[in-house]
Image (cartoon, rainbow, N blue to C red; front, side, top):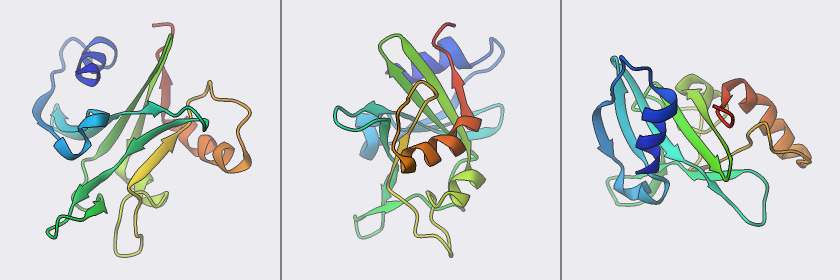
Length: 149
């Protein structure tokens, strides 16, 4: 699994280890999983490059009791979402706190419908349309570039 290897090679310190790992089979194409590190809860995804649109796409949903897709809920969400981006020699990750995902309308709550997918724009993405540029602007604060590491 690319995500797990990437986290161990680039993101974790030598004294940290991934525990309580659970793979999210409904999002296996994006290597979806949840885990803890030092008591902190995480959900991770491997973003995919799309051929016709700038940025990288990642799904972000679960099944409800009626087996229908639904956005993740804020109250049940792990503390952080890690989205790993790998594109040839470029690589990095976004680390979004769940409060930010709620503010951006991605997690569902009493006041937000939530979203079932997300497009991310690393700092190397340029010449974006106005909407993508606005999204990149808020996302940049949560991005770390590991291209030359």
